[in-house]
Length: 346
Image 1 (cartoon, one colour):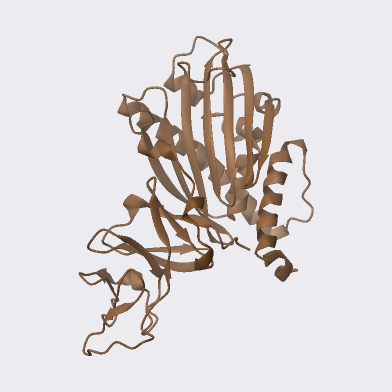
Image 2: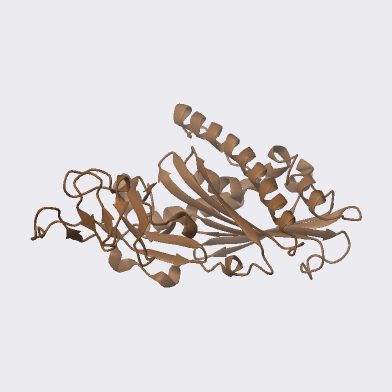
């Protein structure tokens, strides 16, 4: 089940050009393109003539032209040209989806058009501040349900076990982290404090610490599929709780988990360098390091999905570290109930 009345990331803005881009979102085939004015649009990826994917066509002066018989559609999905005839059939149109370009993302609305509210699109100003937060972004195709990736980011005790060579550290450092959690209407915020801990490999490569560090991990889950992260460390004993803007290691991460199907996810992510902002090589190294960590997660959650598909979830148990994950799941269930989907499934 998917929450339909919500904004999802359809693409990075620079992915969509004058060439059609095929994408599947909430198990619906979508084609993204820019017309000759540069406006981005999203249509159902199916021509209304003979059902050929429009992503196999090309962008012309008039719009997106089907590659089979040449029917052309504008950004609203209206057919504007039929080769060989002047009159265009009234029903010659395809569904279009509301698409908004903001903060380097293209956001798509998959639900009821009259309920779309652009003010609900997440603000992420760090993508617009290359001076203070130079960044790079990526996209992974992950073979698991998107909720497993959200679960993964809600229970960070896994970091010491999976990410020992990158962002991890001692497993017990993460298990014993001090947690501060604040529920919100759209999810929750939590901060984890790890004082006097050994800096993990990724941090040590980036900043010459004097010894142990005081670490923090600040996360906000915004239902259904966005997680905003601010993590960092400064030399131990320098008051990280009071002033995290002191010199040290600092990064911001955006996790955008767009469901492709019930068992596959489009993982949009960006990482921003908050410590050596004038050094492009530092931003590149951070991007590479975080990419390695995400590939470690990818291996785990894809194996997890395989076992869940094979054996189900009925025998799984929760532990104390699942508190934020359980709250997140309840938030998603509430939104599904508001759309009537859980009742329909029952």
